[in-house]
Image (cartoon, rainbow, N blue to C red; front, side):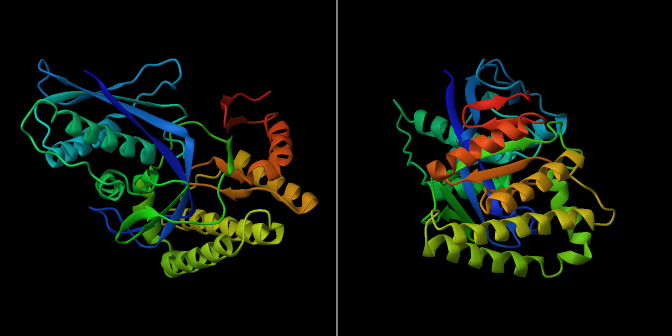
Length: 336
């Protein structure tokens, strides 16, 4: 019997980059993210008497995108499942299948959603195995599951909370803010697998001269961002612009660490830089626009204020679909 679970991706506005403890993925600074409920990973598990080890295969479904993990990624996924099996007292071997409804390994936080989904699915197996047996189980809370998921992928711990996830050195939790119901769009500047993984980036940024002071800068921006998001709602255009500037400076701070590491490396490419320049021009002309951010990848995330910016979202869509593939609420859209 297959047991299935899913989990969403999330996009951090204050970034997680750098670890004080690599084994537990403990972050050097606090981070905050918006949960992307439309971007999901689906995982299913089935116990098999014929298997001699846990195995992974792509989950093939018409509503999901084709996926093929590298051997390194496959082993990381399976090894984390071993951690979950020990915690949830799962015996025997399992067939693991997974896939996303969005592109993977290109800066859209598929690692966050996949490890969160695997954690949730293993928990469902744990709850299910107690039926008809004397085994006593207790459902784990979202915070407990989040803590375990963090061991597999740090940013996955934020995917258990919606719409906003807060992550600090003691774990992740929901944070209440006045701004919610944002509309999400991604400008896909490069959909190929990243040459530098996010895990490798966490180590490489430590060699940048600019990493000194990075945790303090991020924590200060976090306080400023939360203050703006708590004192008013998204209909306050002046305040929204302040939020835009904080988030803009934050993702550039992170990418500058990449550019100044020894040796330097880059996720931004020519299309990324052109799209960012065009977004700035839109902002200047309209005196309004979306929150803009980037993860450790080439692709650009835009967050619009719900119905208040529906016309603006449509304008951005019409413009960027001429040159880029996009991801919007109703799915993957190829350039015109």
